[in-house]
Image (cartoon, rainbow, N blue to C red):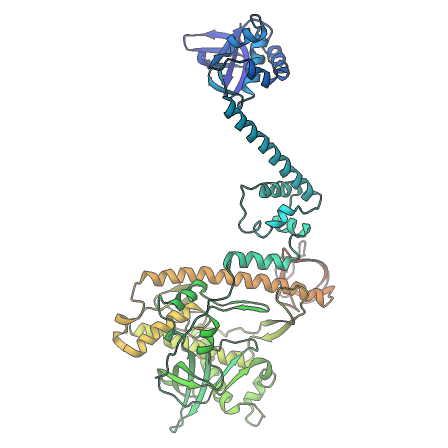
Length: 628
């Protein structure tokens, strides 16, 4: 005796081996035995053999017309065995009963299951709706398949082109377009970016890099709404100092300036003057919301996305000839011995005499010119005392660090002679060593200000945002800790408030300390253990990393464009470790698969085989070894 039963949605026919009141053991053709419930059995039969019965029943089911079955079936719920006898006109065989069950079960739109072997025909209106839905689904599947085939063949369907700007960052995965696109990706075994570029949905790799960043971080564009900073700081005392700023040519946010005043007692007063947007931007006001949304200025070749609105930058920037509020740190020093006698912080107004630029002065301001009092050095009365004391500051930090700071690496500025979003824009790489005198000079005084002002906050019990390094670990916190790599007891970013939100927060705290002294901790915008201060640190670190990653991405892209524009087919590189090398002509690090083992610093020549502007990789192979 055999039985037809249902198991997990599948129909099976097997021989009865043993049976009890509620269960039975059945045996398959291969001899495998299974335990099933009697309630799952549809019917029993004696012939034909199970395998033959299933084969014949499935073949029969394919010949039965579902429309005709629906017309013939009772309108109420029915049992399959009863319907089979009426349909076939005689007591049905096992093959006929099974074939009918298979046919009914294959058409859920026509027949609704009501239990074991029992069905009910769908009402006409419900059947019509179900059939319409099936037809629609079939048409959609056909359309989806057509789009997929077109993309696999290298053609861009209009429907995919229309939503190409969403497929990389915020795709709606329930749409036919995405499903077709995903199917094409699976068949071609490629990435979304590569496929869209190959299909011409994006004009070039640069457009993809920019879109991916902008659509996520600036979906509404980079422009600020119009703002009116108003007047601020006009009642501050005006101080006559001879101050200059020193920045790159492209700098429009002049955060800092330096002044030198010779005192009657033979000592020198050095002023470090910082712009004060903290007078206009107050915690939780409209300008603060704008600044906190970005947390830092974004820099990429050819484009700068400022943290603050241009109207506010213009009102605060220490532009030459304009009277501007400044938070000034004055130090009284013996520049001959390097002794720092005293320091004082004042909120005042100053007028910067000139905004100096690296590209016009770096070639003239050399170590030799600074050391020779007879040399024709521009701005000598300003530069020489600043340089002399900066050397003492550097030596003191080296002593605290226990080693000399290594600043010999060459850094590059990227200058584009055209739009930042056009890959054909000519790009120039301008090298500059980090130990150039003007770089070192400005860096020393910014480190000094961040150190002293961090100590001032700690002295008055005012929390700030500090950057520390201990045991090789760099972290940000709200209390003063040493920065071992720089060689200072504390370091609080405070000198770039127009560009970094952390510096702006610290400026608010400093303004409170300057005005209120020991009671500042009670009136400062952020009190000790303020949870919002910790939230700012977390948000800033995350955002700063995103901005930095994007800057690195775009610099790698323009390095590849520069190499192509220069028509370079071979380059020299220095081995960093294993197969990792740094090009000698550009700030580009890449891997050379299969590179032999070399010592660090080995100079090698590479053949350039290709450029991957989407993956930002350079395809190279070793040509020859040059020197150690």
